[in-house]
Image (cartoon, rainbow, N blue to C red; front, side, top):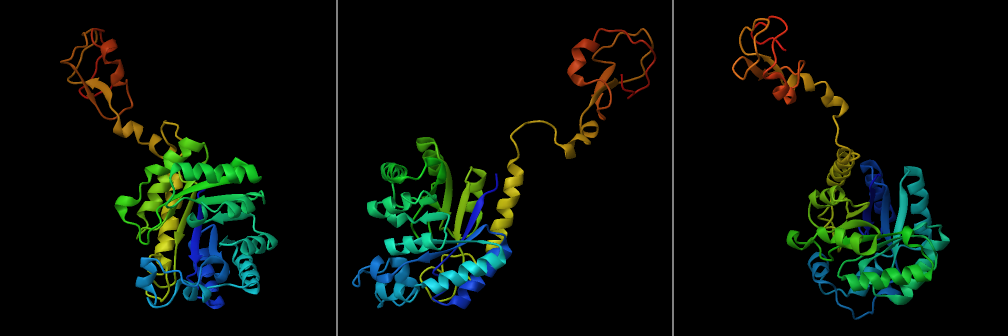
Length: 331
């Protein structure tokens, strides 16, 4: 099964439709399955006196409020429609994370078939009930959450009308960038075992090795932030991949998918031809005459593997030669 790779543009468009389209170009060229933005109304998302997160203070004007920062990053309905159209042209799926009820309704009206729930909304009962009631595919991020909170959110989504089979839960650590010793990839398996559900991973580390490892561990969805340039001004650019890195991540994931295989242990088509070269046969260690008894002194095990298998060694020792053998001749 192919990993669903979400290239997370988020708010890295800086409020510019042209930049957003360039991000779509990058995601499509990299081979991602979807490019994801964020849909919100600043006044519905954050109070005007709310402080920024520490990582946001480091990457934007520290004196600016979270509200003022976010207000500049809104995408209105016409922008959404244009980006959806452009994604269709570029043959990549458009996704966006809604952060309020009005945004949920907008995305539903625009035909969204997959709703991505961010980590910060996992304890938002009315929000979860609203999305759950749509009965669409749901991808739920679980940064900052424990198993009990995940269970509550999952139960709410299901009871509101979304079948469990339509839900994928993403393990995540909500820090930008995430320290390597706080990734805890094994939690993905814990979630899968606890709820019997599809799992994936939303990555906030620097680099690309962790999402690649997550795929090797069974992630069905990978989400990763990307940008045109990490030095751009804005809250999320610094912890995002640049275009060449996104391309490398997608390529590596596709290689890992091939490498995982079907799990059946048997000779592969490409290695079958090497069996005769790499394996060994029972051969004459020295010239042997007809009627002579085979012993550990007059037989040896050498390449190639075109003769009798060494696994039959005990059968051969003690038998008599039916004909003459030259040194190194296979029995």
